[in-house]
Image 1: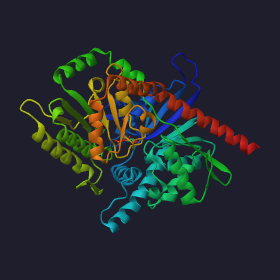
Image 2 (image 1 turned 180 degrees about the vertical axis):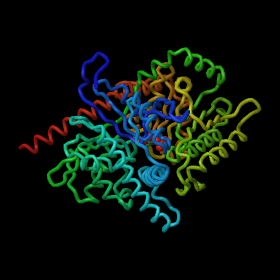
Image 3 (image 1 turned 180 degrees about the horizontal axis):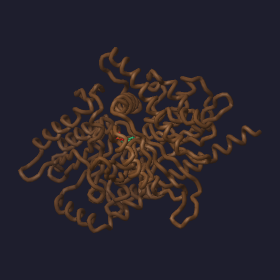
Image 4 (image 1 turned 120 degrees about the vertical axis):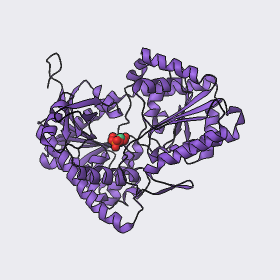
Length: 501
Ligand code: G6P
């Protein structure tokens, strides 16, 4: 692998994540169209110049025939991507089941599925087996492409078994694992039937990374309490072998957002939005439609604010963008939230119902207080929205980091809007001093924070924005990726030295 000028890269990096950074759509038997997506991880790694990166992951489509698989592999190679082909049954059991119906809610403190206990136990076992099998399938593809000296960086809760599978293949492989969600308190993790197997599999990595110091601490204490291993300031020790555990808070490619604000299309969008909402303060929420994001609670807090602040009723509008995802995850996660029982697939209708009620209550013939969209926006439209927003509401019930808060700050250098941020998002650790921190479960507190944000003096907004903008533009995604990989290299060198001594 070489740079465009023919010089070699410092190191090859194999990034392994459940999902590839491109989505594939089949156009014919052998024809595929590919679109690069723009998630946090994608932009982080695209900006890393030191490494020649290849992605290994699932293309998000079922391709049962060999002709299609071959054609897709060739098309993806141009984007430096290598596919792992998972059949429908594996996707159902591994991705919908174990990953998104068990690990995702558990890691966000929402507990294990509550439906019929016997059914859960039976499906749990087959889903766990599928999870292990899928992780081995990822490992098989890595091993086909691995060369000595490569760094292999595994990502997220989908691939907790991968470090163990890779080390079984080659003990000397440099393996890092990074979790993009929270790692919960050991008291939560210990409820998981496969708690020990997962911890041991992750510990096979040389370096284990989390967004915050708290998540890293929870992981170490799960290893000490559940596995009886020794936790040290560096990580976890098992019979003289150290797995380094540390916090590496992710960032965004802030320049990409700042530069986008100059684009004619974005300028045009900004102008339109300003005209459309002239005379009203704009509040914004952008979330994947997932119960961890706390969308119903946020909207109820806005209703409370309108109830108690008649003055603001026709002077403020909430734009809530809810991006649908994981629509196939089964409806077995029942959870009491406020006075509702909610499952992912019922979330949309529940949110619609609340929005309808509030718009009916506080709307006029010409304006409604909430605009709710069930879809994603393209990049220019999103940047324009961030730029015209006066108050952003990021009120996740739990969130690994939450990069929407970073993106909003990056686009606010002329407006200096206010960020209301959940104390349960990882971003609260980095943007807490500039944001108004709230407990998203406390609707009265969030309603008060909305009032505080809307009434904040320009001087105070300036001070808070400066703090956050400096953080977002200096702690970038590129810096995050480079720090993790160089730490992984150092960890492996130190471990080799220890063995020699
Ligand atoms: C979270 C996870 C990512 C995941 C993303 C989108 O941010 O940490 O690993 O890719 O959600 O979810 P999806 O299931 O659509 O890949």
